[in-house]
Length: 318
Image 1 (cartoon, rainbow, N blue to C red):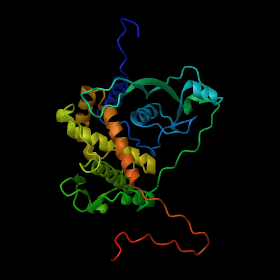
Image 2: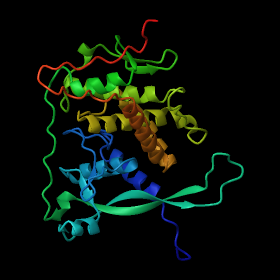
Image 3: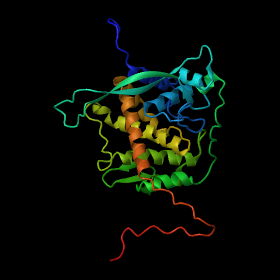
Image 4: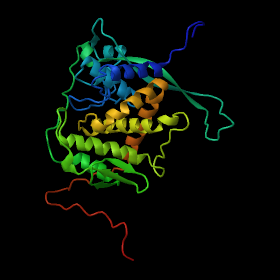
């Protein structure tokens, strides 16, 4: 880095884009990592077929929403060239972040310091809608109004979280380690999603809170967030819920009661450019934890009519 040039703050750049996206419609605030018009689809790299993660998911969702890209397929200029596709002249790239690791002298004051250091580096990618010579795969279709989504039910049931229905509020209670949901009949269709989609969006949000309990991930934010800790936790739950919606393929929109949190989130993002990175990382960690609780699917029978053996009794009689 040459003398006289200020060091570039990638965290601040992405945070600034998120803030502008939130402030774009002050009369009708919308969280930018929510896709109200269609199903969430995890951003993928066209060349490697690997999903982007962490804050890059949110950043690319914002870019896709702002430019009305219909497919979540991205790659660098060089990667598109390797695929015999050409970025069109005048197209603007979107910023993503990757980390390079290097070794340093461990801090003798920290027992857990292994000397590994990570530095954020900027990279620029283009959506497949900005290139010629590439045919994207078909996008998943928006789910219609249904009563249950079997795959989502199975995923959330496998976590072992205890869910109680009743009343008119949704929350996670740490003292009893229980998720509380409104009666299913209280969820209604809206202009952007069905009652089923709304129900699962809320249920996923509360499961992210459940993961943060002390005896699970013990999610803490420390002194850095101060009075913003509650807003930070809600931000993690919202991002985690959006990640789950994309993974499990159900759509969602911002819950009406979340409008009251928007001002807190916006202040948090303005006060701390790295807050969105922390929230996205903790949301990814929560989703990974929920995935680790999944049970393997039973193998299909070898022949028609064959019975799949029952699992052994975890508490056999003596």
